[in-house]
Length: 100
Image (tube, rainbow, N blue to C red; front, side):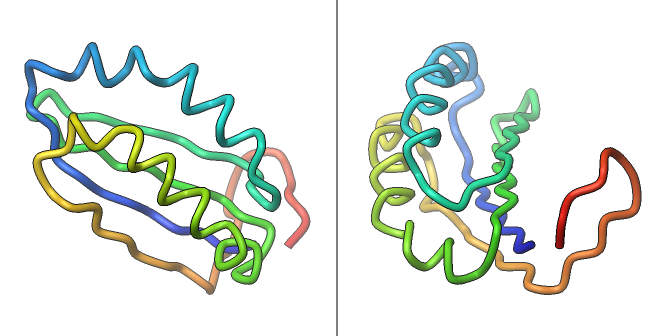
């Protein structure tokens, strides 16, 4: 298991429009091999955090172009460039079991 987070800022006035894109993003992400789960969280101030749970670091690397294309499709909303953080050491502490 491998986790990658991406954080960006959007205008608070654009939160609802940004969220309205979620179904299109969901469809695009379903086509990306190696993704187990993706969560998106947004504060009222427009701070966005996307958390991707991947099968492996290799899967992330193989999907990099597709993931960049997804963020590119949202670029009109972004006030900052995406900041990506990789987490190769993952421990599941709660919730349904995932193979690691």
